[in-house]
Image (cartoon, rainbow, N blue to C red):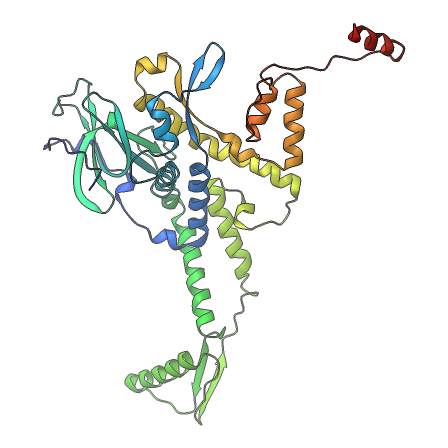
Length: 400
């Protein structure tokens, strides 16, 4: 594979007590065919992917973009030569949501400089308590991994892997939504299969065929059943009945079985487990413009923020050196792109910040994508208020 990191292969003996297999090594994608489950993973992956992560530095004048650092362009545009930053973060987040965890290999040159980040599939973690890896770190964690469809297994140290976990009960291993909601997902898949079968048969349900004669031979009964099944399935709605047979439909309607309500509850159950608000799945009952705005903010704060912060924390620790961190460098997602409002609301917000001396005029122009003005870097403020009788004095004094 083009992103293989070849290292010395190691053999282990009697280390099962110090080895654990991550959920991501069991590649079962059958759940992705369930529509609600797929939509939730797609929404979360795209929500993370469309928010740019920027390298910043804390300085005496505040936070500034560290555009001169080589990692700034790598994380903002292309973590590796084969995928954009959007595809990279979408892949990592989709893997974390589906398998419970995801990982990316940190490729480095001989001097330790990061040269690329590549999504990988971790197959095994091993705590090296006997020093086989000959690392300076005590009890270093060794990572076995595969790259995409390549079944060859490689290994590296945990310090060379960005490891993102979902819900974890012990800080080490993690659990996935699909493992905890497997019954709900399976039920939804069964309802989809039933609905598909019902439509393929022209919305005609099962029926009972009553014969006037008593045939006890199983082979003869089987032939009759096969005949009616063939006629029933091929014609879809109408089929002929020979003399001596009576067909009685088994009328179990979707409405009587509350099919729609049960399917909706199952979908909402999966969505809430992922932290995805139901309106993003098309369930708009009870929502209006104000509640949608509040739900979007709640989605950012209660669901996406922890995903952003785990990525930031992992990148800060493993991509930046201790010297760089002490110098004030850190990664930060620009979550402001998720809070974009209408043009009218945006104008009111920017005007409020500029008039309150929070933003300079150029800060406001930057938010609108306009070029900076040479005279727009000074903070401005309202001159205050006057009594009506003193208004003329203020104008005269201003003209002196």
